[in-house]
Each structure stands twice: as structure tokens, then as C-alpha cells.
Amino acid sequence: MKPDRDTLPPRLSDDLLLILKHAAGNSITLQQIIEILHGRAFNIILILMALPFCTPIPLLGLSTPFGFGLMVFGLRIALRKRPWLPQRLLTRQISHLTLQRIIGVAMKAAFYMEKVLHPRLKFFHRWASFSVFNGLMIALDAFFLMLPLPIPFTNMLPALSVVILAAGMMEEDGAAIVAGYFIGIATWVYFIFLWWVGKAGVEIGTQWLGF
Image (cartoon, rainbow, N blue to C red):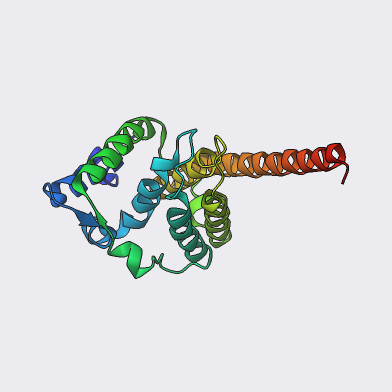
């Protein structure tokens, strides 16, 4: 029998609207968002931090600091410790206009995710060993996100993996977590391919120049 809506955790879209309601037209910090959302805050912050980078064109200048914050998150999850962010990031003001734009994108993603995500294969979320894997995958995705490469999809692939992993952990959806793993592995393959192409290009160039 399907559980009543009242017995399920809050919808992601409800949490996002709650953030906007508390902001009340003003700037807000990540610290305030954590206080508003309590236990679900860290997975939602992972989603909000990664979503702006889910575009084919890299956001140069922003991916490095946000990637660093996501990597710290991932490592803390892997160590089974409470997620932590540098005070500088926690207290950084997010303008209401920027918040509206991020929430707007997040709401579109939330409506889709709410249709497909539901608790299943819960051991991917609950077993300690998988918590380590989840955290390490997020940290590795964040490392790739940090690289300032002006190449299409270098932001999108790792960011998408983080978003799907965080959504899967929040909804205890093991299938989503597995999908996040696959996208993470695709990220590694893509970056290895870029490295191989770059190396081959350098070798051809040096041979052509006669070095």
C-alpha cells in the first residue's frame, strides 16, 4: 500500500519554497538555509550548489570555489561526519535575485525528480560502506568541477552526478544513487579522453615543429 503523503518526508519543492519564504525578498546565507531546513539541509545545499553548473557551457570563476565546498562536503560524508563548509562560504550573502534564479531552476528539477524518486534499494543509503562510496564519489566529482577548463560538459557531468547522488540520498532512492555513480564514471572517462586528446595534440605539435 502506498504511504500517505503526510507520512513521507517533505517534498524538495516544498523545502525550496520554504527557503524563498524565509528570505522574504532579502539576501540570505548558506548558514541561514541550514537553520531553515534542519536535517535535510545538507543534501539540498549539495543540490543548490551543483545545479547552476548543470549546463554544457562551463561557469568559469565560480566552479573552483563551489567545487571546493562540494569536495569538503563529500569527504565529510565519506568519513561519516557532519558535513562542514568553510565559514567564508557559510556567511557569504546570496542576493534575492540570485536565490530566485537558483530556486527557479531547482523547482523545475524538483518537479521532475518528485515524479521518479521514491524509497527503494535503501541499503545504498543506509549501509556504512555505501555512505563512504557516496561521499567519495561526490568528492571526486567536485574535484573535476574545480578544474578551470573552458571545455563543454566539464562542469555539467560532475555537477549532474552530485545532484542525482544528493537527491538519491535525500529520498533514500538507491536506484538514483546508482545512476549518480554511472554519471560519475562517465565523468572520469570524459576527462581521461580529454587528457589523452590533449597529450596526443602536444606530441603531434612537437613532432610538427621538429622538437
